[in-house]
Image 1 (spheres, rainbow, N blue to C red):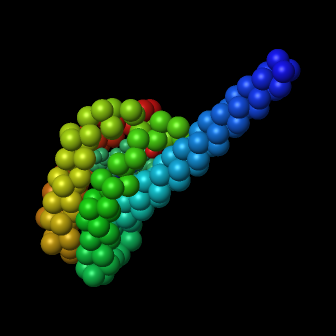
Image 2 (image 1 turned 180 degrees about the vertical axis):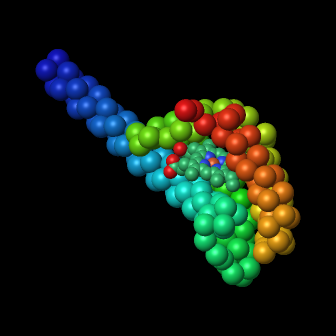
Length: 154
Ligand code: HEC
């Protein structure tokens, strides 16, 4: 009898252990996906900024319509960003440079995206006018740096 009880307890604890393992793995997979999604979003923004920088330096020509599309892409990313960052990815195993403060200071963090959006809208409106674009890009760059300084680990 004692033997059966022990075996039963062992099976139960094994099942519990596996259950916890399964959940942890699911959390990890979900968090990894969330990290990769928001990094892709940020990389898209970075790509647009790089192309706009090339134009500003006179290293490449861009039609006004393309400048507007790039700027509007940043506007869209700023709109999508809060949802992309919402998930606290403490269980992620892929590399992330997002600090835990993103989620402990969520209101401040997420409140920075509307500023970024406004700067990108001003940039779209300035397409083709390098003077006005320079000012708008300066504002936009400040919003990137301000948030990265605060919420990204080096
Ligand atoms: C409100 C905060 C915030 C703003 C504004 C912001 N970022 Fe980010 N960005 C982050 C965080 C947090 C990460 C780290 C994401 C991670 O690794 O999980 C990041 C990561 C990145 C990355 C690296 C992505 C990767 O593959 O690891 C690039 C590139 C980037 N941002 C570009 C920009 C540019 C350009 C702007 C401005 C036009 C900008 N970001 C504005 C918070 C912000």
